[in-house]
Length: 350
Image (cartoon, rainbow, N blue to C red; front, side, top):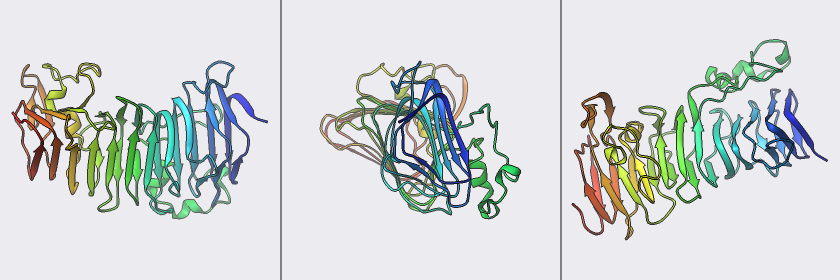
Protein backbone atom coordinates (compact mmCIF):
# COMPACT_ATOMS: atom_id res chain seq x y z
CA UNK A 1 0.00 0.00 0.00
CA UNK A 2 1.28 3.45 -0.90
CA UNK A 3 0.13 6.99 -1.69
CA UNK A 4 1.07 8.40 -5.09
CA UNK A 5 -0.09 11.89 -6.14
CA UNK A 6 1.10 15.11 -7.70
CA UNK A 7 1.03 16.76 -4.27
CA UNK A 8 0.74 15.14 -0.86
CA UNK A 9 -0.37 17.52 1.90
CA UNK A 10 -1.24 16.72 5.52
CA UNK A 11 -1.86 19.47 8.09
CA UNK A 12 -3.16 18.30 11.44
CA UNK A 13 -3.10 18.98 15.16
CA UNK A 14 -2.43 15.32 15.88
CA UNK A 15 0.65 13.14 15.62
CA UNK A 16 1.03 11.93 12.04
CA UNK A 17 2.28 8.39 11.46
CA UNK A 18 3.55 7.51 7.99
CA UNK A 19 3.45 3.71 7.69
CA UNK A 20 3.27 3.53 3.87
CA UNK A 21 5.44 5.13 1.14
CA UNK A 22 4.53 8.64 -0.01
CA UNK A 23 5.49 9.78 -3.50
CA UNK A 24 4.95 13.15 -5.16
CA UNK A 25 5.01 12.60 -8.92
CA UNK A 26 5.43 15.15 -11.72
CA UNK A 27 8.08 17.09 -9.72
CA UNK A 28 5.58 17.76 -6.95
CA UNK A 29 5.88 18.07 -3.20
CA UNK A 30 5.14 16.34 0.08
CA UNK A 31 4.04 18.75 2.83
CA UNK A 32 3.59 17.29 6.33
CA UNK A 33 2.93 19.69 9.22
CA UNK A 34 1.59 18.84 12.68
CA UNK A 35 0.66 21.83 14.81
CA UNK A 36 -0.83 20.34 17.99
CA UNK A 37 0.70 20.26 21.45
CA UNK A 38 3.42 17.56 21.66
CA UNK A 39 2.52 16.30 18.17
CA UNK A 40 5.13 14.33 16.23
CA UNK A 41 5.75 13.18 12.68
CA UNK A 42 6.56 9.45 12.75
CA UNK A 43 8.26 8.29 9.56
CA UNK A 44 8.25 4.53 9.18
CA UNK A 45 8.14 4.57 5.37
CA UNK A 46 10.06 6.55 2.73
CA UNK A 47 9.05 9.86 1.18
CA UNK A 48 10.03 10.57 -2.42
CA UNK A 49 9.60 13.11 -5.21
CA UNK A 50 9.60 11.73 -8.75
CA UNK A 51 9.49 12.84 -12.37
CA UNK A 52 6.42 12.15 -14.50
CA UNK A 53 4.07 9.39 -13.43
CA UNK A 54 6.87 7.38 -11.81
CA UNK A 55 8.57 6.41 -8.56
CA UNK A 56 12.07 7.23 -9.82
CA UNK A 57 12.92 9.58 -6.87
CA UNK A 58 14.50 12.04 -9.32
CA UNK A 59 11.86 14.77 -9.15
CA UNK A 60 12.61 18.47 -8.83
CA UNK A 61 10.33 19.34 -5.92
CA UNK A 62 10.33 19.65 -2.15
CA UNK A 63 9.58 17.85 1.10
CA UNK A 64 8.54 19.85 4.16
CA UNK A 65 8.39 18.30 7.64
CA UNK A 66 7.33 20.60 10.45
CA UNK A 67 6.59 19.55 14.06
CA UNK A 68 6.87 22.81 16.04
CA UNK A 69 5.99 21.28 19.43
CA UNK A 70 7.28 17.76 18.87
CA UNK A 71 9.82 15.63 17.07
CA UNK A 72 10.40 13.88 13.77
CA UNK A 73 10.80 10.24 14.73
CA UNK A 74 10.35 6.73 13.33
CA UNK A 75 12.52 4.13 11.66
CA UNK A 76 13.13 6.38 8.60
CA UNK A 77 13.27 9.73 10.36
CA UNK A 78 16.96 10.09 9.56
CA UNK A 79 17.08 8.83 5.94
CA UNK A 80 16.09 10.95 2.94
CA UNK A 81 16.64 10.08 -0.73
CA UNK A 82 15.49 12.97 -2.95
CA UNK A 83 18.59 14.00 -4.94
CA UNK A 84 16.93 16.80 -6.91
CA UNK A 85 14.65 18.15 -4.19
CA UNK A 86 14.66 20.44 -1.18
CA UNK A 87 14.14 19.03 2.34
CA UNK A 88 12.82 21.40 5.00
CA UNK A 89 13.23 19.77 8.42
CA UNK A 90 11.97 21.69 11.45
CA UNK A 91 10.95 20.31 14.83
CA UNK A 92 11.08 21.42 18.44
CA UNK A 93 13.37 18.50 19.31
CA UNK A 94 16.73 17.77 17.72
CA UNK A 95 17.14 14.62 15.61
CA UNK A 96 18.40 11.66 17.63
CA UNK A 97 21.06 10.47 15.20
CA UNK A 98 22.93 11.17 11.99
CA UNK A 99 20.89 12.37 9.02
CA UNK A 100 21.75 10.21 5.99
CA UNK A 101 20.77 12.27 2.96
CA UNK A 102 20.83 12.39 -0.81
CA UNK A 103 19.36 15.82 -1.48
CA UNK A 104 19.77 18.91 -3.63
CA UNK A 105 18.88 21.42 -0.89
CA UNK A 106 18.42 21.41 2.87
CA UNK A 107 16.94 23.78 5.45
CA UNK A 108 17.13 22.57 9.05
CA UNK A 109 16.30 23.96 12.48
CA UNK A 110 15.24 22.83 15.90
CA UNK A 111 14.06 24.94 18.83
CA UNK A 112 16.28 26.29 21.58
CA UNK A 113 13.65 25.19 24.13
CA UNK A 114 13.40 21.67 22.68
CA UNK A 115 15.43 18.53 23.31
CA UNK A 116 19.06 19.47 22.64
CA UNK A 117 21.37 17.52 20.41
CA UNK A 118 24.23 17.59 17.94
CA UNK A 119 23.43 17.80 14.24
CA UNK A 120 25.34 15.41 11.98
CA UNK A 121 24.61 15.24 8.25
CA UNK A 122 26.15 12.71 5.88
CA UNK A 123 25.29 13.61 2.29
CA UNK A 124 26.05 11.50 -0.78
CA UNK A 125 26.85 14.34 -3.20
CA UNK A 126 26.63 18.14 -3.56
CA UNK A 127 24.44 19.95 -1.03
CA UNK A 128 22.93 23.43 -1.09
CA UNK A 129 22.03 24.97 2.27
CA UNK A 130 19.40 27.69 2.08
CA UNK A 131 17.05 29.70 4.26
CA UNK A 132 14.68 30.20 1.32
CA UNK A 133 12.06 27.72 2.47
CA UNK A 134 8.79 29.48 1.60
CA UNK A 135 6.56 27.43 -0.67
CA UNK A 136 2.95 28.45 -1.21
CA UNK A 137 0.47 25.66 -1.73
CA UNK A 138 -3.06 25.82 -3.12
CA UNK A 139 -4.31 24.80 0.32
CA UNK A 140 -2.56 27.34 2.57
CA UNK A 141 -0.37 30.19 1.39
CA UNK A 142 1.01 30.80 4.87
CA UNK A 143 0.55 30.05 8.53
CA UNK A 144 -1.09 32.67 10.76
CA UNK A 145 -0.92 31.59 14.38
CA UNK A 146 -4.00 32.56 16.30
CA UNK A 147 -6.54 31.90 13.54
CA UNK A 148 -9.25 29.28 13.96
CA UNK A 149 -7.01 26.53 12.60
CA UNK A 150 -4.96 26.64 15.80
CA UNK A 151 -7.72 26.77 18.39
CA UNK A 152 -7.12 24.45 21.33
CA UNK A 153 -3.33 24.40 21.21
CA UNK A 154 -1.20 26.00 23.92
CA UNK A 155 2.43 25.78 22.87
CA UNK A 156 2.26 29.02 20.86
CA UNK A 157 1.78 31.02 24.07
CA UNK A 158 5.23 30.12 25.40
CA UNK A 159 7.15 29.78 22.12
CA UNK A 160 9.64 32.48 21.23
CA UNK A 161 8.89 34.90 18.44
CA UNK A 162 11.88 33.52 16.58
CA UNK A 163 10.61 29.94 16.72
CA UNK A 164 7.14 31.00 15.60
CA UNK A 165 8.76 32.71 12.65
CA UNK A 166 10.85 29.62 11.86
CA UNK A 167 7.80 27.39 11.53
CA UNK A 168 5.55 29.88 9.73
CA UNK A 169 7.25 28.81 6.47
CA UNK A 170 8.53 32.30 5.68
CA UNK A 171 11.80 32.37 7.59
CA UNK A 172 14.63 34.07 5.73
CA UNK A 173 17.45 34.08 8.31
CA UNK A 174 18.79 30.58 8.98
CA UNK A 175 19.78 27.89 6.54
CA UNK A 176 20.94 25.61 9.35
CA UNK A 177 20.72 26.49 13.04
CA UNK A 178 21.90 24.34 15.97
CA UNK A 179 20.81 25.95 19.24
CA UNK A 180 22.34 23.43 21.67
CA UNK A 181 24.95 21.21 20.06
CA UNK A 182 27.73 20.74 17.56
CA UNK A 183 27.38 20.62 13.78
CA UNK A 184 29.06 18.17 11.43
CA UNK A 185 28.49 18.19 7.67
CA UNK A 186 30.15 15.41 5.68
CA UNK A 187 29.84 15.20 1.88
CA UNK A 188 30.93 11.79 0.64
CA UNK A 189 31.02 12.39 -3.11
CA UNK A 190 34.28 12.99 -4.94
CA UNK A 191 34.60 16.75 -5.62
CA UNK A 192 31.23 17.31 -3.90
CA UNK A 193 30.36 20.95 -3.21
CA UNK A 194 28.80 22.36 -0.04
CA UNK A 195 27.10 25.59 -1.14
CA UNK A 196 25.56 28.09 1.28
CA UNK A 197 23.08 29.84 -0.98
CA UNK A 198 21.10 31.99 1.47
CA UNK A 199 20.97 32.50 5.21
CA UNK A 200 23.25 31.54 8.07
CA UNK A 201 24.96 28.43 9.36
CA UNK A 202 25.16 28.85 13.13
CA UNK A 203 25.85 26.99 16.36
CA UNK A 204 24.42 29.11 19.17
CA UNK A 205 25.77 27.51 22.35
CA UNK A 206 29.15 28.76 23.48
CA UNK A 207 32.06 26.56 22.45
CA UNK A 208 30.17 24.18 20.17
CA UNK A 209 32.18 23.16 17.12
CA UNK A 210 31.40 23.20 13.40
CA UNK A 211 33.10 20.51 11.30
CA UNK A 212 32.89 20.53 7.50
CA UNK A 213 34.23 17.65 5.41
CA UNK A 214 33.66 18.39 1.72
CA UNK A 215 35.93 18.52 -1.30
CA UNK A 216 34.72 22.01 -2.20
CA UNK A 217 33.00 24.70 -0.14
CA UNK A 218 31.31 27.94 -1.17
CA UNK A 219 29.66 30.37 1.25
CA UNK A 220 27.68 32.68 -1.03
CA UNK A 221 25.07 34.21 1.29
CA UNK A 222 27.19 37.15 2.41
CA UNK A 223 29.67 38.31 4.99
CA UNK A 224 29.70 36.79 8.51
CA UNK A 225 27.11 34.13 7.68
CA UNK A 226 28.98 31.16 9.19
CA UNK A 227 28.75 31.76 12.92
CA UNK A 228 30.00 30.02 16.04
CA UNK A 229 32.18 30.31 19.13
CA UNK A 230 33.83 26.88 19.15
CA UNK A 231 36.30 25.31 16.74
CA UNK A 232 35.65 25.52 12.99
CA UNK A 233 37.31 22.83 10.90
CA UNK A 234 37.19 22.81 7.09
CA UNK A 235 38.78 19.87 5.30
CA UNK A 236 38.29 18.03 2.02
CA UNK A 237 36.71 14.61 2.27
CA UNK A 238 39.72 13.27 0.37
CA UNK A 239 42.83 12.88 2.48
CA UNK A 240 45.01 14.44 -0.26
CA UNK A 241 43.64 17.57 -1.95
CA UNK A 242 44.50 21.03 -3.25
CA UNK A 243 43.39 24.14 -1.38
CA UNK A 244 43.18 27.60 -2.96
CA UNK A 245 42.50 30.39 -0.46
CA UNK A 246 41.56 34.02 -0.98
CA UNK A 247 42.00 35.38 -4.49
CA UNK A 248 43.83 32.20 -5.49
CA UNK A 249 40.32 30.84 -5.96
CA UNK A 250 39.28 33.75 -8.21
CA UNK A 251 40.09 35.03 -11.67
CA UNK A 252 41.65 38.43 -12.31
CA UNK A 253 38.22 40.07 -12.52
CA UNK A 254 37.39 38.90 -9.00
CA UNK A 255 34.89 36.21 -9.97
CA UNK A 256 35.00 32.68 -8.61
CA UNK A 257 36.91 30.21 -10.70
CA UNK A 258 34.82 27.62 -12.53
CA UNK A 259 34.49 24.41 -10.56
CA UNK A 260 36.59 22.53 -13.09
CA UNK A 261 39.27 25.23 -13.45
CA UNK A 262 41.65 23.22 -11.29
CA UNK A 263 41.38 19.50 -10.62
CA UNK A 264 40.91 18.18 -7.11
CA UNK A 265 40.61 21.66 -5.63
CA UNK A 266 38.78 23.37 -2.77
CA UNK A 267 38.44 27.06 -3.59
CA UNK A 268 37.88 29.13 -0.45
CA UNK A 269 37.70 32.53 -2.14
CA UNK A 270 37.99 35.91 -0.46
CA UNK A 271 34.18 35.93 -0.29
CA UNK A 272 34.18 32.59 1.48
CA UNK A 273 36.75 33.80 4.00
CA UNK A 274 34.68 36.95 4.57
CA UNK A 275 31.68 34.73 5.33
CA UNK A 276 33.42 33.35 8.43
CA UNK A 277 32.14 35.51 11.27
CA UNK A 278 34.57 36.76 13.90
CA UNK A 279 34.25 34.77 17.13
CA UNK A 280 35.45 31.19 16.56
CA UNK A 281 37.88 29.90 19.19
CA UNK A 282 39.98 28.35 16.41
CA UNK A 283 39.78 27.82 12.65
CA UNK A 284 41.56 24.89 11.00
CA UNK A 285 41.82 24.48 7.23
CA UNK A 286 43.59 21.67 5.36
CA UNK A 287 45.54 18.54 6.36
CA UNK A 288 49.13 17.97 7.40
CA UNK A 289 49.52 15.00 5.05
CA UNK A 290 51.98 14.44 2.20
CA UNK A 291 50.60 15.39 -1.21
CA UNK A 292 48.34 18.22 -0.07
CA UNK A 293 48.94 21.65 -1.60
CA UNK A 294 47.79 25.11 -0.54
CA UNK A 295 47.98 28.38 -2.47
CA UNK A 296 47.03 31.58 -0.65
CA UNK A 297 46.27 34.65 -2.73
CA UNK A 298 45.14 38.01 -1.36
CA UNK A 299 43.35 37.64 1.95
CA UNK A 300 42.96 41.06 3.53
CA UNK A 301 40.44 43.84 4.11
CA UNK A 302 40.09 45.21 0.60
CA UNK A 303 37.91 47.85 -0.99
CA UNK A 304 38.71 47.27 -4.65
CA UNK A 305 39.49 44.34 -6.91
CA UNK A 306 43.24 44.64 -7.26
CA UNK A 307 43.49 43.88 -10.99
CA UNK A 308 40.51 45.88 -12.26
CA UNK A 309 40.26 48.63 -9.66
CA UNK A 310 36.52 47.97 -9.41
CA UNK A 311 35.03 48.84 -6.02
CA UNK A 312 34.38 45.83 -3.78
CA UNK A 313 34.36 45.84 0.03
CA UNK A 314 35.46 42.47 1.34
CA UNK A 315 37.12 41.69 4.66
CA UNK A 316 38.92 38.41 3.98
CA UNK A 317 41.38 38.72 6.85
CA UNK A 318 41.91 35.77 9.18
CA UNK A 319 40.11 37.29 12.17
CA UNK A 320 40.23 34.34 14.57
CA UNK A 321 43.16 32.11 15.60
CA UNK A 322 43.75 30.17 12.39
CA UNK A 323 45.80 27.08 11.59
CA UNK A 324 46.53 26.18 7.97
CA UNK A 325 47.86 22.67 7.32
CA UNK A 326 49.38 21.36 4.08
CA UNK A 327 52.36 19.68 2.50
CA UNK A 328 53.34 22.22 -0.19
CA UNK A 329 52.56 25.90 0.44
CA UNK A 330 52.59 28.86 -1.97
CA UNK A 331 51.96 32.44 -0.84
CA UNK A 332 50.76 34.35 -3.90
CA UNK A 333 49.28 37.51 -2.41
CA UNK A 334 48.94 39.81 0.57
CA UNK A 335 47.73 38.00 3.67
CA UNK A 336 46.53 39.69 6.85
CA UNK A 337 45.45 38.34 10.23
CA UNK A 338 44.12 40.21 13.25
CA UNK A 339 45.31 37.48 15.60
CA UNK A 340 47.31 34.30 15.52
CA UNK A 341 47.93 32.74 12.10
CA UNK A 342 49.96 29.54 12.10
CA UNK A 343 50.88 27.72 8.91
CA UNK A 344 52.32 24.22 9.08
CA UNK A 345 53.74 22.82 5.82
CA UNK A 346 55.48 19.45 5.63
CA UNK A 347 57.42 20.14 2.43
CA UNK A 348 58.30 23.13 0.29
CA UNK A 349 57.02 26.63 1.01
CA UNK A 350 57.39 29.64 -1.28
